[in-house]
Length: 457
Ligand code: MG
Image (cartoon, rainbow, N blue to C red; front, side):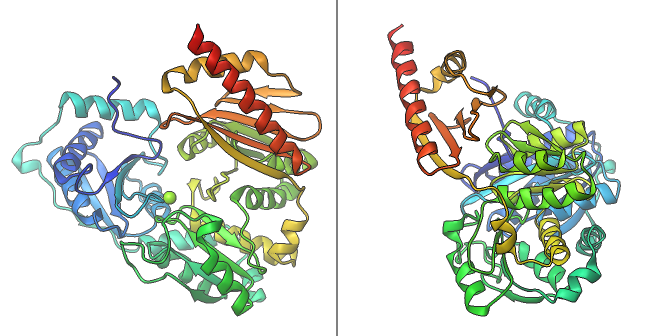
């Protein structure tokens, strides 16, 4: 069996049972060995296991010769920005992002703040599993240096990409729900500096996440939409546990998924740059491509996963990226998901368009979406995808991650195996409510047929 440390977003586990201090110290040794010591930023979120894991990782990193710059407790994108800004060799960030409260994680970035690609993670895994740790001599052990002012530098950079005066003139009122986590440090302050009237809910730091789950999903955010409505606010903002993802509530309390915000921000950027390339996973709505086409821009479809999107942006020069889950990537700032940057971009858009978020959302093409799943034997996944590919037909077919088929009437379906669970996921959309339901039924039938044939052969 393949031995792995890294999942799709770093190393994750339940604090103190899966991710113990002993384990974390060895991860620190492996990462420090990989960087040959190096000058590394270290930072963490507010989770209950976060400080324990950070100290253990630090011990390993120092033992391997690293010089550590402690940036404190802040949103992940602030650490990523600071790593690039201060010219450090990389960063080790202790966070479990949107995972449930009991989890903690370790994320490793390179000098531009982007998480390591898979081929580099494999090098760290080799060092870890083969215990090829580097231990420096006693007189080369370094003390941790404090890195102050990261939040200032980060927020100044974010503001540098938007029309601050135009936003200030509008005096927006905004409700923020940072999920009792690190988003409380960045977004309320950013909004005040942009002249907004700021209200907060779930805004005291608490690693048990008493207010709502750390993952922002429309169904978790009813308190936010109710508060927006009862205060008559212009906008609601919800972040995940490390404030790199953002969902918004419009003034009516409606909370769209991130694809619509990506389409709106993309449309605005396309007005100024018709050659714009937008990177987004294959699971994102065609709405983004509709908007891009209208202005002559293009969509770069990628495999599902935020690190994949970041690397695709760096390689292709795409200025904008986004995910359905609320991750928005703005390369002129940094090609990673960034919660505060997303808020600033949306306010800039609202200020310049002179319309409310609800009005802007109404202007977008309409799609009906159905998501579903089906169980399947883990070992058959690859064969199923192969077989499915040979049976489907449509206007356009892509197989970068599962099988996606677009049809002439604007409808599409993606059938994709989960990387971790024994299931296939279905994402269908169409111009009528019936169309995506019909597509999911049809493709589930096809998958069942393929599975029973493969089992029989
Ligand atoms: Mg996150």
